[in-house]
Image (cartoon, rainbow, N blue to C red):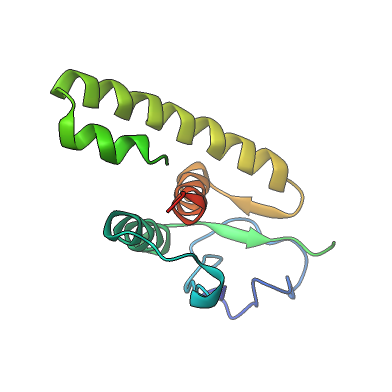
Length: 130
């Protein structure tokens, strides 16, 4: 991952732990296609959307130093009320996961909640069973 300020996000090189700002952000995400399982059209779309959303708006600064598939089945056959309930649950799960991600990266990376949520969504999209 590359930062807008030129800092290499992988190595964490730079002067200290920059505060999150527009200058400290993720600009590029490259996925190694050989490390990913073949994806369905839905899974591939979810990956592309998650990456786009994360790149579109994020605040992410490294410090120096050391969905689930049920959603796709439901939207094809469930009632609107059921889909809304699933979406609410999914939103809650992603919010909780985002907070946990921020907590676990505390001291290693600074990011705002929206960036953590987008990153968590990308992680889910990459981890989703094929």
